[in-house]
Length: 214
Image (cartoon, rainbow, N blue to C red; front, top):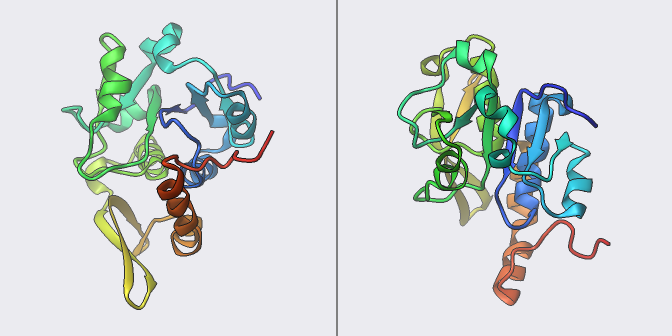
């Protein structure tokens, strides 16, 4: 697939395409449309192959794609200024393909913003957003909605059992009175994450969705 003019670029920054990351990428593709989405910095050929199911894929980092630097805005929580509708509508928006951490490690700035001289950077508020939520909010702004008019709930609890709750300390939009979160992620947290955590504990390595795939 060739993206002539992607609306969103996700710079793949994690060392492994984990199940959680795949779920966020897949939802981002559903939100943006695969013809509007480019994954950059995908060095692993197998990952390029599987991510081509979700959008366009580029081995190079956005840092190396010099012809696009004047056309992009990096969505960076460290940026001082919020993204405005006229900017979102006229620039390609770069989202860090980074799973959130608490507290934030400012990896978008370290891995992307600081490496592109004079690049425009904007924030999506002061609450850390997941990858797919960043795509949703940025496209909402591109459609003309002010960031201040998007209600964001800080942190949600996912009940796994009566005595076990997973706290997601990130920001999630409230749409039609309901928190906007991917149902597939909830299912993963309830039924899949334990096996991946056991694998990490046993091997010291994050499990890739490509483990066992040639």
